[in-house]
Image (cartoon, rainbow, N blue to C red; front, side):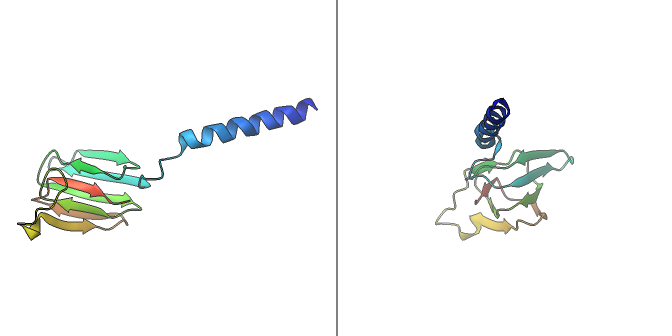
Length: 110
């Protein structure tokens, strides 16, 4: 009986810890690397679905997540109706690297 209680307690503890360790459902799984001209990367692990302003331009964006990442010319990931070019491009979720000279922010879609 003691052994059964110990197993049940271990299972209950394990079930309680799983949600705390898992990434949020709205987060992409993997790593998003924002690499400055100096070569120093800023790594975001399991990035949330939101806008990330870029600190330096030009920059490399390496997408090693399971989500598409969009690049924007504005710092708030908003495309202007006046300038169709402001939503620059998408970076595929397969380890693709995109050099950007104009992007001011990136948006994680998933």
